[in-house]
Amino acid sequence: MEHYRAKIRPLETLQGEVERLRASGRRVVFTNGCFDLLHPGHTRYLCAARAMGDCLVVAVNSDRSVRAIKGPSRPIMPEDARAEVLAALDFVDAVVLFDEADPLRVIQALVPDILVKGADWEEDAIVGADVVRAAGGEVRRIGVVPGFSTTAIIERIRKLP
Image 1 (cartoon, rainbow, N blue to C red):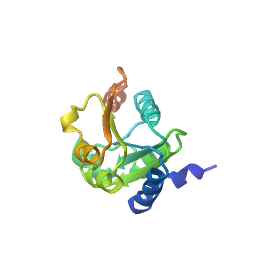
Image 2: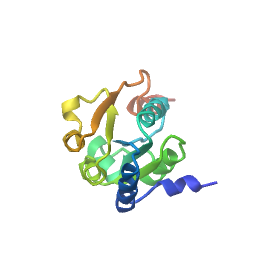
Image 3: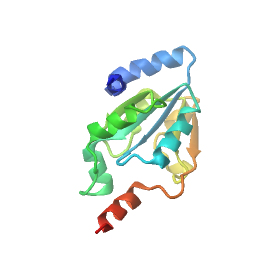
Image 4: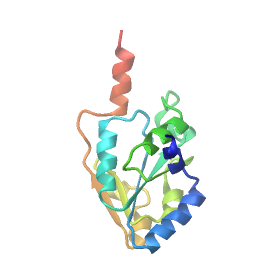
């Protein structure tokens, strides 16, 4: 029942798996984020990303990384729980945690065929885009689903009586 936890891998293990996938002609898609409170904006985004290739790798910010980016009140869910929820999704093939403020080290290690971010990111601001393009890969942006935002959800909860 908990076979999905096997999708959560250390970077070193995942690196070898990605190399084997690419050597067999499969296209590896990569994205990253905090994924603090999973909502339909996330699931639609991840499903669309997976449709771009044969394997979707999701890099998840560690708790320390999220606090550095979003402030001391975040994350709401701890890193292990966020990784587990993502790994349970059928369209996510692998999950890796990273502790840095950005996923550059992970992107450099994996060199995915396709790097995906939300359309709220300007293309020239997408970390690792240069690495992926230099290796012959693509950078793609997916439209943001209106009405879904982790920050907005948290604010709504805080305002509840």
